[in-house]
Length: 165
Length: 180
Image 1 (spheres, each protein chain N blue to C red):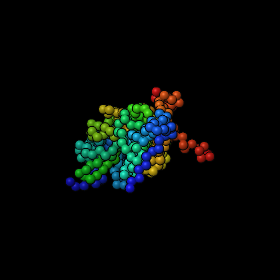
Image 2 (cartoon, chains in turn purple, cyan):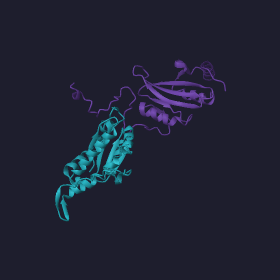
Image 3 (cartoon, rainbow over the protein chains, first blue to last red):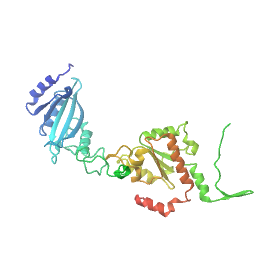
Image 4 (cartoon, chains in turn cyan, orange):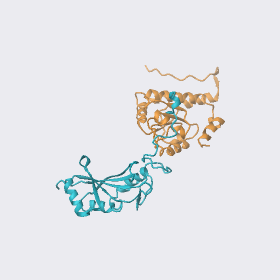
């Protein structure tokens, strides 16, 4: 199967989806589109079933404290036969971190969404088993958000008085 | 010619056909040269421990030939490596399953203080959850350092009263960790 270029992919996407997404750019040749929470499942379904993006590489999130919509969920998808990757971003606001689950499209999204919930607190609605995967179960915070202090408060050997400060 | 050295007997009264000494010292001597370590190795310090057990450094010379991979039969818990907070209940469970008398050695910076991992997900030293007898510094410590720590454990064992578990200060220490 021939390689698919970013331009071909973009024209196919526009033909199938219309204006439910915007193009963010092509940093390092990686086409990046942004869409909304209401359309994300439709976009991902079209990508998998019609454009042959059968592999979900990763789901993750970024926290931008300076933006109005602080949280941005990122999907990396890969068309193995066409040799092309695509990035899909969805912005969410703090306090309303809900997004529909992608488990029905790729079963492998299960643990990725659990990890994103664990570290960023994104609620994937419809996820079959949304609980923490990496951190201790009784943790109450979401440690990869930037307001969370990364250093452990129980640490004593780095206190200033050991260094004459 | 092999140069086999035998440990000296504890001080006592010797006469023709008998030798009298204190029971706790005799027991301590026997215990200290037949410790069964339980290696709880989670990262690079565990690799150093493998070298320590290998023929070049040979911890078996100190009577620790038999590693116990069941906490039920182990005397010495050797914690080697970073303990994540999610691992902490497991480590505590292993410690609780060990029978008295039991000793704990924290090998390396991570087990002693969290090491370079000053972060939310790593336990900042195993002494937050279980009492520790000997700390071995290093990142990772060389096998010589691990052996030195082991010899310090042996000294503790030799000088311990017969039943540490009945000692009030030891009970207070365990109570501080919520272990009765």
